[in-house]
Length: 633
Image (cartoon, rainbow, N blue to C red; front, side, top):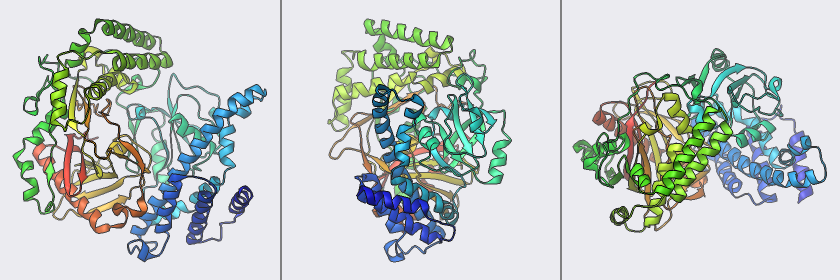
């Protein structure tokens, strides 16, 4: 088997593809993936192979898709992406496993560290999976052109922090800055060409190139390990636009298949190693609603108000009591046979954390010491020390903070109203994790960048029953890429919404829909995210959702900075796209899109401004889990 695998890989690598048609290349790719699956136990790759074979098979097997049509191109593009993601997952695991063994063995054998540092990557480059990478690179551009996809190719999504401030754009060959350290002044490197063997210096938060990137190259593996954005923009016009931003401080968002690079309004204070500015230096007129010191532990939706809960809870209350939305399913032409629901909720109001902390003097003292350690590390400009201090502070809250005696019966009553299957201990732990997320690094840095004092930021905790979603969606009632307020932009994934909001690798089903009768729409990409987050079967559980007074503020979108925690963690399951209706059932897909577009418009009208909406689908029923004002640029 080893000899045959090596032989096949060498044959693929030696293959002259210049005279091959795209169909021939797809055939060689399918054979290469089959070879990998025969030679190893790769569960994700086996499922990706089934997806690829269906897309590459006859029209009758793929829902009647005509080969090299735009619809077929989108299905094949999703299949290629799914294969690539499976390959990256398995090879990143192999690299990590080999590297862990390489260090102790090699150092004891007195091997030069220079050789050891790349050992895992060389193991990957010697694997038969490398032939798969070669063939994906050979055919991908032709498939993306057939699908009408964006020219962007995203190899590594990078860290969430770059959506606040990624650094200063520098146009520089990556090979010329080997050995440099930009930790104190992070940069985004624009490099026209990559050799593939370059290292990524500390402080480089993103590498954008105009040349193709091999998915198993040294730099691709290293970017995923280091959580550095690595993307290619081969289009000359798009590359010229990026080059024009040289010297500017930027933030970077991934929206669907697009990489959005914009000037950062937060400045260098949001970067990983620079202490924050005086209050209000970067965003003038920023106002934080103070806590109203609500005396009870738990409030009902009718009592959600400023100073008691944040915008997330208030918005849900408004939607839940809306007479328009309560009759929406009956009045809507597209919703016949289904229903629209805003799930019930309760909330621990602002001040609950502080009240709990005051009642636990031992933990209060430890939190004070840890908070001082964070401030001291920040003043010293030591990012690593600050990161460690923030970790300690969160652990103190999660593992040491005691539940007040009078809170327990309140939580027991709430649990009973949501099916009674969650435990008080589980819900309490989830609440503490939400509170502790106030001090995750991204949230901490964003507050400093905005000039928000620590004591000003209050955290309410929204308790809701977890809806066991078959599909989850995010809707923007104005297109976030183009700013067009006459069309809806949406994304749909299989399972719970964490795969969407958590910026996990792969594409969602993304679409735009016109705000006119019939909601004509355009599918931009089909789903390829390899893993679905799935609620545990036969279990009714609760999600504790963060709801601070520092979100959706004028001039600054603080949403997504803080955590939401499911009491009973969802399962992670590979998605069988070979059997997924979102890929192969065009009629069902279009029906869902039309329903979502109509729903988005109805919510926008009800809330009287463009909205960022999150929800899910179970059978024919739609659930609205969140709607907040959309920040337009």
